[in-house]
Image 1 (cartoon, helix red, strand yellow):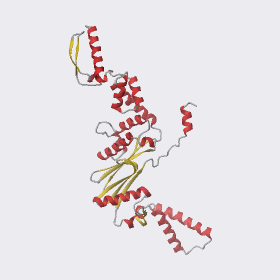
Image 2 (cartoon, rainbow, N blue to C red):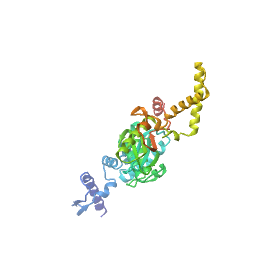
Image 3 (cartoon, rainbow, N blue to C red):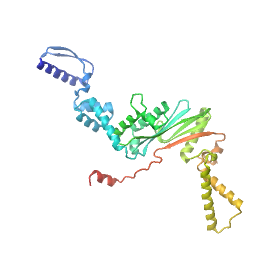
Image 4 (tube, rainbow, N blue to C red):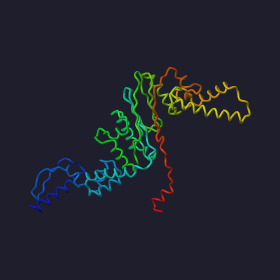
Length: 356
């Protein structure tokens, strides 16, 4: 019986391989040598090394979206076993992520997501190493998914967001590792910030240099009084103002006194130097105070949203151009802000890789 059994199994495996390209439904068979008739389910053999090498690589790539070279190596390491190859790729992805974790990731995308009622929203920054990878579909999709997911679960920190899971059961942290293994770069969730609208107010967002829906180089969310289309229109203008001129404060009253005193000291020294160099006589003390105060006001207005020149009408300040508008808060993310970029020397890198 053993030779017959071996022949039957060989026959079935051969049959499954020949039919696998066309169907995975049960197939009928009739082996005259073994006098065996019946049906055979091909599907269970999908993960039992019944693919040809090319078929296995194609199937693994379809299932994991991993690079072709990685799929080839995984199939070779696991003797064609698809399930084992998937596990192998996952382990290699973790190893790759660990190796690349120390590399500077200053490129990437900012993602913005708002609730349908414009009462809550979130900003996230997802980093990679090169702008080329940041513009790929896989990285762009990841940034969009992470932003929408963060909004959906009301995430308030990178830790809670990384440990949370997508609807398919994969954690955000694991998905970052998966993308790292696919693009070959360090992928990091750098920061996340949640915003809530004031009662009777709305959140308005803006993406600058958008690379897709809700993702781009700069993201801004403004918390503004009012609701409806007019609030959305004014809010968008303010978002663009913040994007263009990068204010640090909303009104003059928000500027810390320490900053005011420091600027006053700078302007006093500067004005004294001007008088000395020009040979002019200093005006009375009270006049000097007014001159210094005016210089301080002008300088600080560059940092204060409502006092800045309005980008759509430079003859007016934002406050003059948009009278009655109340901005409660704003958040602005620019990709790579505060991250020191390493200037790579191409010649040195090539020499290092060549072992020179």
